[in-house]
Image 1 (cartoon, rainbow, N blue to C red):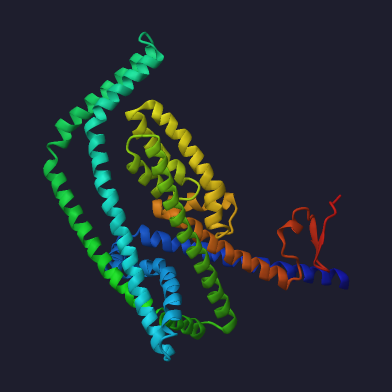
Image 2: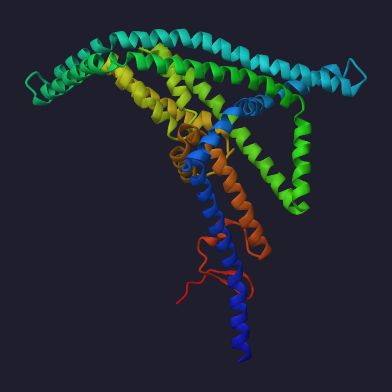
Length: 423
């Protein structure tokens, strides 16, 4: 009787942590969903939130810009300080001068690079788009003729395809006459509003760059204030865990973002060189599309390849097929050689979790969610991994995943893994 009561007591004691963990997880999920719908479904709060984000846009731009430029600042500060420390005996003065010169130099370096790229890309993009708009009807006709010649003049499919294309052109002309032209006034109003929004964003970018300079000049002070606040609100152990998690998240974000930007730039340049050698149309426009969409992990190459293939095939169907082969070879080069060397294991995620993070992030927040979904989920994955390892270590269980693949059960009395199959 006493033994049965003791077994029942042990069983009740063992199930309580799981109930507490399950209840905590349920409450966290419910609260997260409630906050999400409160922000995005309640229009009054959503309008207030959008207004607040509009006011804070320069600050957010400054934080992002400072975060991206910080590696350049650290590199420049290290070398400038080593030069100034040899010429002055005042270390504090040398550090301050090195920080000032490195911040100004990094900001100017980024702005010059952006200006040079825009000066090279925008005129070529404009001419490519203008040429595409002017030549589009002729390209559609030549594409139709190529299809007819490829299949046969008597083929029903060719005739059907020609009818579909002609109907499409007729529909486009009717739409331009009946819908587009009468709505010119509204379109001009919308364009004017868009221009004003662009000017406002550019103004916020300028203010954001100025704010980023102040952030970079006093980044240690801001970091110290944040740590002081953490240790004031949390116990020492929990504060240590939070700071370590933020440090690891910064490592994941920094490695992923900087590596992905460099990787996409290399792919864009290689794409332009390849298309220029192959003498394909819209070389620069297609290279920009491929380079920008390559920022999205896994799905990026396919997102950029589809519209690029359509553009080239309209000009020359055979070259469109060559482009498909070229982009497959280029993406294999990126996926197997360039990408792994630059990114390495910066996220620590398997292919399945990368795809999962992209799908969830893209479904919730669009293109930005597809780009940032991987590092955000990698940080969350790291936090869960540390929590699970802590719980297992506290219970005296092994932490390696491989040891649990063939486990049938865990002995409650010894906390040892049992690999014997139950009869």
